[in-house]
Image (cartoon, rainbow, N blue to C red):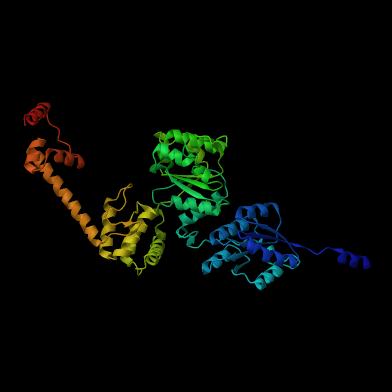
Length: 497
Protein backbone atom coordinates (compact mmCIF):
# COMPACT_ATOMS: atom_id res chain seq x y z
CA UNK A 1 0.00 0.00 0.00
CA UNK A 2 2.86 2.33 0.86
CA UNK A 3 4.45 1.63 -2.49
CA UNK A 4 1.31 2.67 -4.31
CA UNK A 5 1.07 5.88 -2.30
CA UNK A 6 4.65 6.75 -3.03
CA UNK A 7 4.16 6.14 -6.75
CA UNK A 8 1.25 8.56 -6.74
CA UNK A 9 3.22 11.17 -4.84
CA UNK A 10 6.17 10.79 -7.21
CA UNK A 11 4.02 11.23 -10.36
CA UNK A 12 4.81 14.65 -11.82
CA UNK A 13 2.02 17.19 -12.08
CA UNK A 14 0.58 17.37 -15.59
CA UNK A 15 1.65 20.60 -17.34
CA UNK A 16 -0.61 22.30 -19.85
CA UNK A 17 0.73 23.65 -23.14
CA UNK A 18 -0.45 27.10 -24.19
CA UNK A 19 0.05 28.73 -27.59
CA UNK A 20 -0.27 32.52 -27.67
CA UNK A 21 -0.91 34.01 -31.11
CA UNK A 22 -0.41 37.77 -31.08
CA UNK A 23 1.01 40.41 -33.39
CA UNK A 24 1.66 42.74 -30.43
CA UNK A 25 4.64 41.76 -28.22
CA UNK A 26 3.35 44.07 -25.47
CA UNK A 27 0.17 41.96 -25.23
CA UNK A 28 2.08 38.70 -24.88
CA UNK A 29 4.05 39.49 -21.69
CA UNK A 30 1.16 39.74 -19.16
CA UNK A 31 -0.49 36.62 -20.62
CA UNK A 32 2.83 34.77 -20.56
CA UNK A 33 3.58 35.70 -16.93
CA UNK A 34 0.12 34.74 -15.68
CA UNK A 35 0.12 31.43 -17.55
CA UNK A 36 3.57 30.46 -16.30
CA UNK A 37 2.48 31.23 -12.75
CA UNK A 38 -0.45 28.82 -13.26
CA UNK A 39 1.82 25.93 -14.39
CA UNK A 40 1.37 26.38 -18.13
CA UNK A 41 4.15 25.75 -20.60
CA UNK A 42 3.96 28.67 -23.04
CA UNK A 43 4.90 29.32 -26.63
CA UNK A 44 4.20 32.45 -28.65
CA UNK A 45 3.98 33.13 -32.37
CA UNK A 46 3.29 36.34 -34.26
CA UNK A 47 1.18 35.19 -37.21
CA UNK A 48 -1.68 32.91 -38.13
CA UNK A 49 0.58 30.97 -40.51
CA UNK A 50 3.01 30.14 -37.67
CA UNK A 51 0.12 29.15 -35.43
CA UNK A 52 -1.14 26.63 -37.97
CA UNK A 53 2.35 25.21 -38.41
CA UNK A 54 2.83 24.92 -34.63
CA UNK A 55 -0.46 23.11 -34.09
CA UNK A 56 0.45 20.65 -36.83
CA UNK A 57 3.74 19.68 -35.22
CA UNK A 58 2.93 20.15 -31.51
CA UNK A 59 0.20 19.16 -29.07
CA UNK A 60 -1.42 22.14 -27.34
CA UNK A 61 -4.18 22.21 -24.77
CA UNK A 62 -5.21 25.81 -25.34
CA UNK A 63 -4.68 28.50 -27.98
CA UNK A 64 -5.18 32.19 -27.25
CA UNK A 65 -5.85 34.11 -30.46
CA UNK A 66 -4.97 37.73 -29.76
CA UNK A 67 -5.15 39.09 -33.32
CA UNK A 68 -6.38 42.67 -33.49
CA UNK A 69 -7.71 42.16 -37.02
CA UNK A 70 -10.99 40.34 -36.37
CA UNK A 71 -11.10 38.97 -39.94
CA UNK A 72 -7.68 37.30 -39.55
CA UNK A 73 -8.69 36.01 -36.15
CA UNK A 74 -11.86 34.36 -37.46
CA UNK A 75 -10.05 32.79 -40.42
CA UNK A 76 -7.33 31.44 -38.15
CA UNK A 77 -9.95 30.09 -35.75
CA UNK A 78 -11.70 28.29 -38.60
CA UNK A 79 -8.48 26.61 -39.71
CA UNK A 80 -7.33 25.71 -36.21
CA UNK A 81 -10.64 24.00 -35.54
CA UNK A 82 -10.44 22.20 -38.88
CA UNK A 83 -6.88 21.00 -38.27
CA UNK A 84 -7.50 20.05 -34.60
CA UNK A 85 -11.21 19.51 -33.86
CA UNK A 86 -10.59 18.89 -30.13
CA UNK A 87 -8.36 21.93 -29.64
CA UNK A 88 -9.62 24.55 -27.19
CA UNK A 89 -9.36 28.04 -28.71
CA UNK A 90 -10.12 31.35 -26.98
CA UNK A 91 -10.47 34.46 -29.13
CA UNK A 92 -9.38 37.82 -27.74
CA UNK A 93 -11.16 40.35 -29.93
CA UNK A 94 -10.36 44.00 -30.41
CA UNK A 95 -13.68 44.73 -32.13
CA UNK A 96 -16.79 45.64 -30.16
CA UNK A 97 -19.12 44.33 -32.88
CA UNK A 98 -21.43 41.75 -31.40
CA UNK A 99 -21.39 39.65 -34.57
CA UNK A 100 -17.64 38.93 -34.13
CA UNK A 101 -18.30 37.10 -30.87
CA UNK A 102 -21.33 35.34 -32.37
CA UNK A 103 -19.30 34.20 -35.37
CA UNK A 104 -16.40 33.05 -33.17
CA UNK A 105 -18.67 30.89 -31.02
CA UNK A 106 -20.38 29.54 -34.13
CA UNK A 107 -17.00 28.46 -35.47
CA UNK A 108 -16.23 26.57 -32.26
CA UNK A 109 -14.31 29.00 -30.05
CA UNK A 110 -14.14 28.11 -26.34
CA UNK A 111 -14.93 31.72 -25.48
CA UNK A 112 -14.44 35.26 -26.71
CA UNK A 113 -12.68 37.80 -24.47
CA UNK A 114 -12.45 41.54 -25.09
CA UNK A 115 -9.70 44.11 -25.07
CA UNK A 116 -8.70 45.60 -22.72
CA UNK A 117 -8.15 42.13 -21.30
CA UNK A 118 -9.01 41.60 -17.64
CA UNK A 119 -6.57 39.26 -15.91
CA UNK A 120 -9.33 37.76 -13.77
CA UNK A 121 -11.18 36.56 -16.89
CA UNK A 122 -7.98 35.12 -18.31
CA UNK A 123 -7.08 33.42 -15.02
CA UNK A 124 -10.50 31.79 -14.89
CA UNK A 125 -10.09 30.58 -18.47
CA UNK A 126 -6.64 29.12 -17.77
CA UNK A 127 -7.96 27.31 -14.71
CA UNK A 128 -10.88 25.78 -16.60
CA UNK A 129 -8.78 24.54 -19.51
CA UNK A 130 -5.83 23.18 -17.56
CA UNK A 131 -5.33 19.46 -18.42
CA UNK A 132 -5.24 18.57 -14.70
CA UNK A 133 -8.98 19.34 -14.71
CA UNK A 134 -11.52 17.46 -16.82
CA UNK A 135 -12.76 19.29 -19.88
CA UNK A 136 -15.95 18.42 -21.67
CA UNK A 137 -14.85 20.39 -24.72
CA UNK A 138 -11.68 18.39 -25.29
CA UNK A 139 -13.65 15.19 -25.62
CA UNK A 140 -16.42 16.58 -27.79
CA UNK A 141 -16.38 16.25 -31.57
CA UNK A 142 -16.15 19.34 -33.76
CA UNK A 143 -19.61 20.89 -34.11
CA UNK A 144 -21.17 20.95 -37.54
CA UNK A 145 -20.43 24.16 -39.39
CA UNK A 146 -23.76 25.88 -40.03
CA UNK A 147 -23.68 28.47 -42.82
CA UNK A 148 -25.87 31.48 -42.21
CA UNK A 149 -27.75 32.99 -45.14
CA UNK A 150 -25.19 35.77 -45.64
CA UNK A 151 -21.63 35.10 -44.59
CA UNK A 152 -19.47 38.20 -44.37
CA UNK A 153 -15.71 37.89 -44.56
CA UNK A 154 -14.76 41.52 -45.02
CA UNK A 155 -16.08 45.06 -45.20
CA UNK A 156 -17.54 44.77 -48.71
CA UNK A 157 -17.26 41.03 -49.25
CA UNK A 158 -19.97 38.51 -48.56
CA UNK A 159 -21.22 35.13 -49.66
CA UNK A 160 -24.88 34.13 -49.82
CA UNK A 161 -25.96 30.57 -48.98
CA UNK A 162 -29.69 31.05 -49.44
CA UNK A 163 -30.13 28.47 -52.22
CA UNK A 164 -29.08 24.84 -52.66
CA UNK A 165 -26.82 25.80 -55.58
CA UNK A 166 -24.93 28.37 -53.50
CA UNK A 167 -24.74 26.05 -50.50
CA UNK A 168 -23.15 23.45 -52.75
CA UNK A 169 -20.73 26.06 -54.06
CA UNK A 170 -19.84 27.07 -50.48
CA UNK A 171 -18.99 23.48 -49.55
CA UNK A 172 -17.01 23.09 -52.76
CA UNK A 173 -15.11 26.31 -52.07
CA UNK A 174 -14.17 25.18 -48.58
CA UNK A 175 -12.81 21.91 -49.96
CA UNK A 176 -10.84 23.69 -52.68
CA UNK A 177 -9.39 26.10 -50.12
CA UNK A 178 -7.55 23.15 -48.61
CA UNK A 179 -5.95 22.21 -51.94
CA UNK A 180 -2.88 24.33 -52.58
CA UNK A 181 -2.99 24.06 -56.38
CA UNK A 182 -4.04 26.22 -59.36
CA UNK A 183 -7.78 26.59 -59.78
CA UNK A 184 -10.15 27.58 -62.60
CA UNK A 185 -13.34 29.44 -61.66
CA UNK A 186 -15.96 29.30 -64.42
CA UNK A 187 -19.01 31.52 -64.57
CA UNK A 188 -20.88 34.23 -66.42
CA UNK A 189 -19.98 37.91 -66.12
CA UNK A 190 -21.23 39.37 -62.84
CA UNK A 191 -22.04 35.98 -61.30
CA UNK A 192 -19.51 36.35 -58.48
CA UNK A 193 -16.32 34.69 -59.72
CA UNK A 194 -14.12 37.18 -57.90
CA UNK A 195 -16.16 36.83 -54.71
CA UNK A 196 -15.75 33.05 -54.93
CA UNK A 197 -12.00 33.47 -55.42
CA UNK A 198 -11.79 35.75 -52.38
CA UNK A 199 -13.85 33.30 -50.33
CA UNK A 200 -11.47 30.47 -51.23
CA UNK A 201 -8.54 32.70 -50.29
CA UNK A 202 -10.10 33.63 -46.96
CA UNK A 203 -10.87 30.01 -46.11
CA UNK A 204 -7.33 28.88 -46.93
CA UNK A 205 -4.09 29.01 -44.98
CA UNK A 206 -3.04 31.88 -47.26
CA UNK A 207 -5.71 34.20 -45.85
CA UNK A 208 -3.15 36.28 -43.98
CA UNK A 209 -1.28 37.06 -47.18
CA UNK A 210 -2.15 39.27 -50.18
CA UNK A 211 -4.96 38.71 -52.64
CA UNK A 212 -3.98 40.45 -55.88
CA UNK A 213 -6.40 40.74 -58.79
CA UNK A 214 -5.32 41.26 -62.40
CA UNK A 215 -7.88 41.79 -65.18
CA UNK A 216 -6.19 40.25 -68.20
CA UNK A 217 -8.55 42.00 -70.62
CA UNK A 218 -7.68 45.45 -69.24
CA UNK A 219 -4.02 45.45 -70.29
CA UNK A 220 -2.23 45.16 -73.64
CA UNK A 221 0.12 42.19 -73.83
CA UNK A 222 3.36 44.00 -72.94
CA UNK A 223 1.78 45.85 -70.00
CA UNK A 224 0.16 42.67 -68.73
CA UNK A 225 3.51 40.90 -68.78
CA UNK A 226 5.07 43.79 -66.84
CA UNK A 227 2.20 43.62 -64.31
CA UNK A 228 2.75 39.92 -63.73
CA UNK A 229 6.52 39.59 -63.89
CA UNK A 230 7.69 43.11 -63.21
CA UNK A 231 8.93 45.88 -65.53
CA UNK A 232 12.43 45.97 -66.98
CA UNK A 233 13.68 48.35 -64.28
CA UNK A 234 13.73 45.44 -61.86
CA UNK A 235 10.72 46.36 -59.72
CA UNK A 236 8.72 43.33 -58.53
CA UNK A 237 5.60 42.22 -60.39
CA UNK A 238 2.32 40.96 -58.97
CA UNK A 239 3.51 37.35 -58.87
CA UNK A 240 6.32 38.40 -56.56
CA UNK A 241 4.27 40.86 -54.51
CA UNK A 242 1.67 38.17 -53.76
CA UNK A 243 4.21 36.03 -51.91
CA UNK A 244 2.39 33.18 -50.10
CA UNK A 245 -0.90 34.76 -51.15
CA UNK A 246 -3.14 34.50 -54.20
CA UNK A 247 -2.97 35.97 -57.70
CA UNK A 248 -6.44 36.10 -59.26
CA UNK A 249 -6.47 36.32 -63.07
CA UNK A 250 -9.79 37.65 -64.39
CA UNK A 251 -10.64 36.55 -67.96
CA UNK A 252 -7.51 34.45 -68.45
CA UNK A 253 -8.44 33.70 -72.09
CA UNK A 254 -7.76 37.39 -72.91
CA UNK A 255 -4.09 36.86 -72.10
CA UNK A 256 -1.85 36.72 -75.23
CA UNK A 257 -0.79 33.15 -76.16
CA UNK A 258 2.91 33.86 -75.61
CA UNK A 259 2.20 35.13 -72.12
CA UNK A 260 -0.01 32.12 -71.46
CA UNK A 261 2.97 29.90 -72.27
CA UNK A 262 5.15 31.79 -69.80
CA UNK A 263 2.47 31.59 -67.11
CA UNK A 264 2.23 27.83 -67.65
CA UNK A 265 5.99 27.55 -67.22
CA UNK A 266 5.77 29.49 -63.95
CA UNK A 267 3.04 27.18 -62.67
CA UNK A 268 5.18 24.15 -63.48
CA UNK A 269 8.54 25.41 -62.20
CA UNK A 270 7.31 27.71 -59.37
CA UNK A 271 9.80 30.33 -60.53
CA UNK A 272 10.70 32.59 -63.45
CA UNK A 273 13.66 34.53 -64.77
CA UNK A 274 13.59 38.30 -64.78
CA UNK A 275 13.90 40.06 -68.10
CA UNK A 276 16.18 42.55 -66.32
CA UNK A 277 18.63 40.94 -63.90
CA UNK A 278 19.28 42.90 -60.76
CA UNK A 279 22.84 43.78 -59.92
CA UNK A 280 22.73 41.91 -56.62
CA UNK A 281 20.84 38.84 -57.82
CA UNK A 282 20.85 36.13 -60.43
CA UNK A 283 17.48 37.12 -61.85
CA UNK A 284 15.67 33.92 -60.74
CA UNK A 285 12.49 34.64 -58.77
CA UNK A 286 10.68 32.05 -56.68
CA UNK A 287 6.87 32.16 -56.98
CA UNK A 288 5.08 31.24 -53.76
CA UNK A 289 1.62 32.48 -54.76
CA UNK A 290 -1.37 30.33 -55.67
CA UNK A 291 -2.89 30.99 -59.10
CA UNK A 292 -6.69 31.34 -59.32
CA UNK A 293 -7.98 32.04 -62.83
CA UNK A 294 -11.47 32.94 -64.02
CA UNK A 295 -13.05 32.16 -67.37
CA UNK A 296 -16.46 32.40 -68.99
CA UNK A 297 -18.56 29.28 -69.59
CA UNK A 298 -17.28 29.14 -73.19
CA UNK A 299 -13.73 28.34 -72.02
CA UNK A 300 -13.64 25.16 -74.10
CA UNK A 301 -14.72 27.16 -77.15
CA UNK A 302 -11.84 29.56 -76.43
CA UNK A 303 -9.52 26.56 -76.44
CA UNK A 304 -10.94 25.36 -79.77
CA UNK A 305 -10.52 28.85 -81.26
CA UNK A 306 -6.94 29.15 -80.05
CA UNK A 307 -7.60 32.02 -77.62
CA UNK A 308 -6.75 29.83 -74.64
CA UNK A 309 -3.87 27.39 -74.75
CA UNK A 310 -5.02 23.83 -74.32
CA UNK A 311 -2.16 22.88 -71.99
CA UNK A 312 -2.80 25.90 -69.77
CA UNK A 313 -6.52 25.14 -69.68
CA UNK A 314 -5.91 21.55 -68.63
CA UNK A 315 -3.42 22.68 -65.99
CA UNK A 316 -5.87 25.18 -64.50
CA UNK A 317 -8.96 22.99 -64.75
CA UNK A 318 -7.45 20.07 -62.84
CA UNK A 319 -9.35 21.73 -59.99
CA UNK A 320 -12.31 23.85 -61.03
CA UNK A 321 -15.51 25.30 -59.64
CA UNK A 322 -18.66 26.43 -61.43
CA UNK A 323 -20.37 29.62 -60.21
CA UNK A 324 -24.09 29.37 -61.03
CA UNK A 325 -25.85 32.31 -62.72
CA UNK A 326 -28.41 34.26 -60.74
CA UNK A 327 -31.32 32.88 -62.80
CA UNK A 328 -30.48 29.45 -61.34
CA UNK A 329 -30.69 30.85 -57.79
CA UNK A 330 -33.96 32.77 -57.96
CA UNK A 331 -34.90 31.82 -54.38
CA UNK A 332 -32.08 34.02 -53.14
CA UNK A 333 -33.12 37.18 -55.02
CA UNK A 334 -35.35 38.60 -52.23
CA UNK A 335 -32.56 38.14 -49.69
CA UNK A 336 -30.00 39.76 -52.00
CA UNK A 337 -32.27 42.71 -52.74
CA UNK A 338 -32.90 43.27 -49.06
CA UNK A 339 -29.19 43.07 -48.28
CA UNK A 340 -28.25 45.52 -51.05
CA UNK A 341 -31.03 47.93 -50.06
CA UNK A 342 -30.13 48.05 -46.36
CA UNK A 343 -26.40 48.21 -46.98
CA UNK A 344 -26.57 51.01 -49.55
CA UNK A 345 -29.17 52.97 -47.57
CA UNK A 346 -26.75 53.00 -44.66
CA UNK A 347 -23.82 53.82 -46.95
CA UNK A 348 -25.53 56.80 -48.59
CA UNK A 349 -27.41 57.96 -45.50
CA UNK A 350 -30.87 57.74 -47.08
CA UNK A 351 -34.04 55.91 -45.98
CA UNK A 352 -34.42 52.34 -47.15
CA UNK A 353 -37.22 51.09 -49.38
CA UNK A 354 -39.32 47.97 -49.47
CA UNK A 355 -40.40 46.15 -52.62
CA UNK A 356 -44.06 45.45 -53.28
CA UNK A 357 -45.10 41.84 -54.02
CA UNK A 358 -45.59 42.75 -57.70
CA UNK A 359 -42.10 44.22 -58.03
CA UNK A 360 -40.54 41.36 -56.11
CA UNK A 361 -42.28 38.86 -58.39
CA UNK A 362 -41.00 40.75 -61.44
CA UNK A 363 -37.47 40.63 -60.04
CA UNK A 364 -37.68 36.88 -59.50
CA UNK A 365 -38.97 36.38 -63.06
CA UNK A 366 -36.30 38.59 -64.65
CA UNK A 367 -33.49 36.72 -66.49
CA UNK A 368 -30.67 38.86 -64.95
CA UNK A 369 -28.12 38.26 -67.71
CA UNK A 370 -25.80 40.56 -65.78
CA UNK A 371 -26.29 38.35 -62.71
CA UNK A 372 -25.54 39.73 -59.23
CA UNK A 373 -23.88 42.86 -60.63
CA UNK A 374 -27.03 43.77 -62.55
CA UNK A 375 -29.22 43.03 -59.53
CA UNK A 376 -27.05 45.27 -57.34
CA UNK A 377 -27.27 48.12 -59.86
CA UNK A 378 -31.05 47.70 -60.07
CA UNK A 379 -31.33 47.86 -56.28
CA UNK A 380 -29.22 51.01 -56.25
CA UNK A 381 -31.36 52.71 -58.89
CA UNK A 382 -34.61 51.81 -57.14
CA UNK A 383 -33.22 52.99 -53.80
CA UNK A 384 -32.36 56.39 -55.29
CA UNK A 385 -35.34 56.92 -57.64
CA UNK A 386 -38.08 54.97 -55.85
CA UNK A 387 -40.46 54.86 -58.84
CA UNK A 388 -42.06 51.41 -58.85
CA UNK A 389 -43.82 51.87 -62.20
CA UNK A 390 -40.55 52.87 -63.86
CA UNK A 391 -38.78 49.91 -62.25
CA UNK A 392 -41.45 47.50 -63.51
CA UNK A 393 -41.24 49.04 -66.99
CA UNK A 394 -37.47 48.65 -66.95
CA UNK A 395 -37.65 44.97 -65.99
CA UNK A 396 -40.33 44.29 -68.58
CA UNK A 397 -38.40 46.06 -71.34
CA UNK A 398 -35.13 44.33 -70.56
CA UNK A 399 -36.73 40.91 -70.23
CA UNK A 400 -37.92 41.25 -73.84
CA UNK A 401 -34.73 42.68 -75.34
CA UNK A 402 -31.88 41.54 -73.12
CA UNK A 403 -29.16 39.39 -74.69
CA UNK A 404 -26.45 37.31 -73.06
CA UNK A 405 -23.84 40.03 -73.45
CA UNK A 406 -25.99 43.04 -72.59
CA UNK A 407 -26.65 44.70 -69.29
CA UNK A 408 -29.18 47.37 -68.46
CA UNK A 409 -29.36 49.83 -71.37
CA UNK A 410 -31.27 52.46 -69.41
CA UNK A 411 -28.95 55.38 -68.86
CA UNK A 412 -28.97 55.28 -65.08
CA UNK A 413 -25.64 54.68 -63.47
CA UNK A 414 -23.79 55.29 -60.25
CA UNK A 415 -20.34 56.76 -60.60
CA UNK A 416 -17.54 55.77 -58.25
CA UNK A 417 -17.39 59.25 -56.78
CA UNK A 418 -21.10 59.44 -55.98
CA UNK A 419 -24.60 58.79 -57.20
CA UNK A 420 -25.84 59.94 -60.57
CA UNK A 421 -29.06 59.23 -62.44
CA UNK A 422 -32.66 60.23 -62.01
CA UNK A 423 -35.93 59.45 -63.62
CA UNK A 424 -35.28 62.35 -66.02
CA UNK A 425 -32.13 60.58 -67.25
CA UNK A 426 -34.22 57.54 -68.14
CA UNK A 427 -36.66 59.74 -70.09
CA UNK A 428 -33.74 61.39 -71.89
CA UNK A 429 -32.58 57.94 -72.89
CA UNK A 430 -35.99 57.22 -74.41
CA UNK A 431 -35.90 60.53 -76.29
CA UNK A 432 -32.49 59.68 -77.70
CA UNK A 433 -33.74 56.27 -78.83
CA UNK A 434 -36.74 57.83 -80.58
CA UNK A 435 -34.58 60.54 -82.16
CA UNK A 436 -32.14 57.96 -83.47
CA UNK A 437 -34.89 55.86 -85.00
CA UNK A 438 -36.43 58.95 -86.67
CA UNK A 439 -33.07 60.04 -88.06
CA UNK A 440 -32.37 56.60 -89.49
CA UNK A 441 -35.78 56.48 -91.18
CA UNK A 442 -35.21 59.93 -92.74
CA UNK A 443 -31.83 58.88 -94.13
CA UNK A 444 -33.27 55.62 -95.46
CA UNK A 445 -36.09 57.50 -97.23
CA UNK A 446 -33.65 59.99 -98.80
CA UNK A 447 -31.37 57.21 -100.03
CA UNK A 448 -34.30 55.31 -101.45
CA UNK A 449 -35.63 58.42 -103.18
CA UNK A 450 -32.24 59.14 -104.80
CA UNK A 451 -31.62 55.47 -105.64
CA UNK A 452 -28.71 55.48 -103.16
CA UNK A 453 -26.98 58.44 -104.77
CA UNK A 454 -25.34 59.58 -101.53
CA UNK A 455 -24.39 63.07 -102.68
CA UNK A 456 -27.95 63.72 -103.86
CA UNK A 457 -29.30 62.31 -100.59
CA UNK A 458 -26.99 64.60 -98.59
CA UNK A 459 -28.33 67.63 -100.50
CA UNK A 460 -31.88 66.46 -99.93
CA UNK A 461 -31.25 66.09 -96.19
CA UNK A 462 -29.30 69.38 -96.05
CA UNK A 463 -26.27 67.79 -94.42
CA UNK A 464 -22.69 67.40 -95.61
CA UNK A 465 -21.63 64.40 -97.65
CA UNK A 466 -19.11 63.39 -94.96
CA UNK A 467 -21.81 63.51 -92.28
CA UNK A 468 -24.08 61.31 -94.36
CA UNK A 469 -21.33 58.73 -94.84
CA UNK A 470 -20.73 58.69 -91.09
CA UNK A 471 -24.45 58.24 -90.39
CA UNK A 472 -24.73 55.40 -92.92
CA UNK A 473 -21.82 53.64 -91.24
CA UNK A 474 -23.17 54.29 -87.74
CA UNK A 475 -26.58 52.80 -88.57
CA UNK A 476 -24.97 49.91 -90.52
CA UNK A 477 -27.05 50.73 -93.59
CA UNK A 478 -26.36 48.89 -96.82
CA UNK A 479 -27.82 49.47 -100.31
CA UNK A 480 -30.26 46.94 -101.72
CA UNK A 481 -28.91 44.58 -104.39
CA UNK A 482 -29.19 46.11 -107.89
CA UNK A 483 -28.17 44.88 -111.34
CA UNK A 484 -24.57 45.57 -112.32
CA UNK A 485 -25.52 47.98 -115.14
CA UNK A 486 -27.59 50.13 -112.74
CA UNK A 487 -24.74 50.09 -110.19
CA UNK A 488 -22.32 51.40 -112.82
CA UNK A 489 -24.81 54.11 -113.80
CA UNK A 490 -25.10 55.23 -110.16
CA UNK A 491 -21.33 55.51 -109.87
CA UNK A 492 -21.15 57.61 -113.06
CA UNK A 493 -23.84 59.93 -111.68
CA UNK A 494 -21.92 60.43 -108.44
CA UNK A 495 -18.68 61.15 -110.29
CA UNK A 496 -20.44 63.60 -112.59
CA UNK A 497 -21.81 65.52 -109.63
